[in-house]
Image 1 (cartoon, helix red, strand yellow):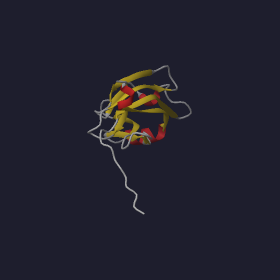
Image 2 (tube, helix red, strand yellow):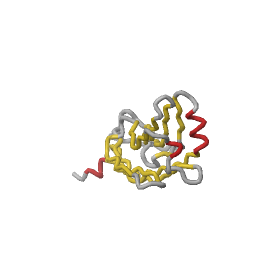
Image 3 (cartoon, rainbow, N blue to C red):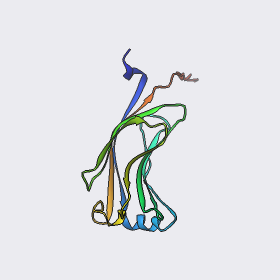
Image 4 (cartoon, helix red, strand yellow):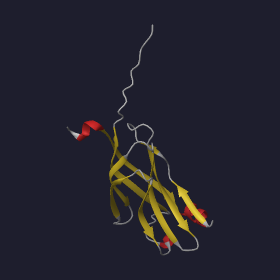
Length: 145
């Protein structure tokens, strides 16, 4: 049997822009966190995704995550490439995304002085496909006139 019959495929190609001054302000807290905009997998009910940046003041360590929020009952996988547009950095994310947090970039030197920022912002792009198992329950509607 063709596996594509039993799964829903959702193409994604989105970018998140984070302003340097917003990230610096968030970094002034002990556990700095800047959440990106949520996008919804248009054809996979209940699944959304975003990019978040976490920066810890004490360690000077910054991490960028691709986060998938979705049904705990449904396995979501991805064949994705995450990249930072101002650099040659990219990482394939071909994995089970059920765990929600998928780190794809870590920086342990002064992130805010890096060349990753262009005109005061950093742009993160994620492109590829999300896949989820097709629900096994069929819903029937009866129209009463």
